[in-house]
Length: 105
Image: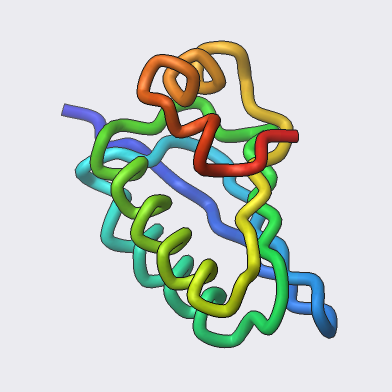
């Protein structure tokens, strides 16, 4: 069985924090994603932008990680912006109602 891959690039520039995702978030990559995201959330003092232009797949584990991160970010009255979603992933956000929690760009 072939394992999925995920690349997480982090950019912290003053008040702007950005993560660029590439690949798939699933059971095989979710722990790495969680660790990387938590690291950024802890060091970010403002809104968090997640660029999903190259994200091809996300499962419920990945969505749960995003929701947990959102709870942490909101404690400081900040937001998570989900940017450049592919249509199949945007549909998942709409079906699950997560488009109402996150700011989708």
